Image (cartoon, rainbow, N blue to C red; front, side, top):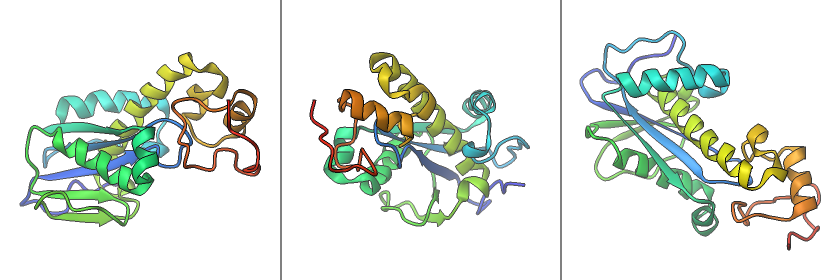
Length: 201
């Protein structure tokens, strides 16, 4: 059973990101403020949910949350500032979108870059512990999946509809056959076991 909040006295926003370990595409993050009396037995870490359940829950979250926001950092930005900083920036951009100002932040993971003067608490595997972080994980995952499904139509040889940009065998085979796209993260080890192979078009 996930906990509804860390501190009942404060307006808390849960934050999580999606796509950190991918070879292509942006990193997405979401921030969600849920009502203190919010309950949903099906809400969990997005990785534990089916695709259908994630999209069903997204509708519930967007309808019932006091506020929610989604932040995006492109693959070009990731290559400039590295994926850790990009994950923090995506969360900051998501918090920027909130129409209610939070008094505290619950961050999935063990590191975070302070957002203005709002206190934060990092929670390892927080998307399996707190409802607001789980809700953020669902939004970040589904909005990123929407983007990867869209660009799969633009570059169909990388199987992004299936792997969402993660380093699967089919994705890396696509890179070997077709080269890189404008969506690939060039600072990542795109070919894995064969880093010596050329990535030029």
